[in-house]
Length: 115
Length: 495
Image 1 (spheres, chains in turn purple, blue):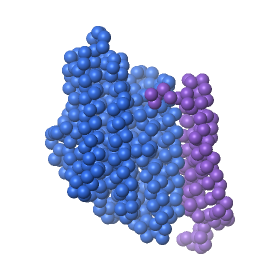
Image 2: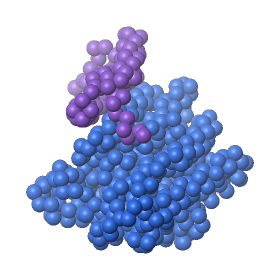
Image 3: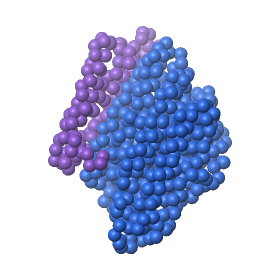
């Protein structure tokens, strides 16, 4: 299971970086999205993967009796998803404006500020 | 509960909300914004006084026990930087009365400024790694909005680069936080400092530390990762750029200093040569980039990069005098670089251009503005007696004491080149006769001049009477270098 998740994380990072390095605005958006997904999945798996063991404390006990899935990592991922969703929404709007201004989807059209 | 620690977060949040509610009335909005910034400065000064008197202040948010609570921790370093944020926030807020068009203000400029201050203060005060990530995102989204607000073509182009690279840095930061949590099961900075040396996998810890170095290095604009800064900083109105230049790279360098002096302190010997090399390369590339520019704002933006190198140098030396020099440098550069951008805004208002070749004759036309520029330019170059001189003196003395002569040579050469760039601006914009006869510019409103003059007084004070500030920052550096105090304080915490 851990190896499968590790492979998925690696593929997501690889695909994300490949897309970000392209010159197309749309691919830039998709790439940024994939990279943030990869980071989220990485956190989720870094804290340890346990299947079918919800972190619920039985009635009367003070701590769960068997090792359970890590709830805090999931809370972190949830927060990160919400944040990256907001940021990505902003990025989409910004890149749409950039497309309107330059009239092209090529990132190479955005070179005025580097001269 | 210690309200003083929470006030620097509540005041900007409330101010941002109020300015949005008062959206219809520009006058009321401006009044609220300036009052909020003044209150933030007052709260920050009170917090600094308290930290200086009673030691490190801690609040465990939500009354959760340590280390599960998200703690807010203010040591001297944090408190000084919160004061800097308050000061620059107030100066920019006053400058914006006349320095910004009504249209940008109608679209929530004031609210974004205060959200930015909220994120910056939060990043300075938090004692929790994931919380630091959240504050970074708060200040990022505000800075994205401020950068793109107005929608002019250069702004959008700059924003695309700034947003893309900062989102990548955030993703790296997030991954590093997750890996560290997987290794130790904790996110509290103080608890990490205790648990991390005991992990059985030192190799993984070093890899994670490099991820942090890349993420914060990108935000601080260190050597190979600085490209977003000169591509974007000169595009928005100068009030916005002043705020960015004064605070944003400082948050990156603050995080580097905090993380490497606290969490990864046990492994510092491994990173020292890397940090020293990056610091030297950052200084050199920034100053060389500036030498090739003929736009007032872009010269200043490139210098921001080379100056960050000095701050990193102080961390890399990792000794009381050097670190105190770096902290002094952060304070000095925050004031000076913001002010220089504000001065470039003044010259733009007078002549309508930032191109040095088209400027000229400002010394004759506006000796006051020329004097203000001279104060800041000499401080940036580090001529005695100025704030920059004492910061560099401390860094160079520490580097000499450690026998790092190459670094000293680089730091001094870059200093001379900085002076060269400042002389170029002086000669082109202020000294030479204007290329063609120019009409007398519009009179400068007092609300533009007063904040710049006030910052000039602060810079002069730092340069002429460096003793008190340097003493304070030396104690801050000693606190950073003996993290036991921080860990002990974070454990306690007023419930």
